Image (cartoon, rainbow, N blue to C red):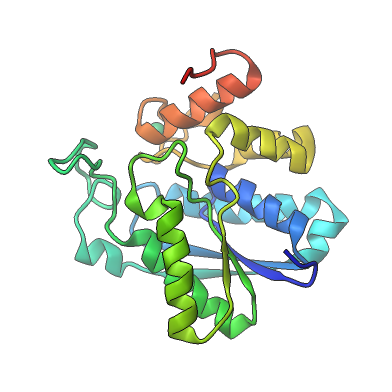
Length: 239
Ligand code: ZN
């Protein structure tokens, strides 16, 4: 990466995208954020976004200087054209094709495509997303190959040289907490713990050691286990 590169970070307000935003602020000269309102049940993540952005700005003068505007995009069409447990009030379960019904078909493809359009307009050269193949819930649009193919397709289709960066692709959740500590010390870990939102059900009742959430949905289970491994209070996965 070049010091002159500028980035647009897909920022949902969750643990992963907040870590990606800190990563981008560490590596690039100028960073902007993009968020999507797609009728997600956990729309609470949209309400935590401005707080997280404000606190990252306050974390260091360098980050304050680098962090540019936030772009919120209405993608309510996603809820209109699909019916999944992410956007409708139905139970989270595994479908006949082996994918969880929280999978919104094409969501990350659409997010990256819309982000590329905004990056084109803003003159930004790198798209940063929190897609991850290590701990993923089986979502095929989180695969490294999907992102690499999409980078090629976007650049062919838009005559650009955008780079798609996915710094969490090969990290598990424990390693994502470790990356946050590397980038911003305990202060960033504490910010992510208390101010970001991951729970699919939008639960923000009690603050657990790993953050807010129901504690049982797939997103909470991953986040909690990763934090407890990071903090040394849970055994590491083997194999
Ligand atoms: Zn949850």
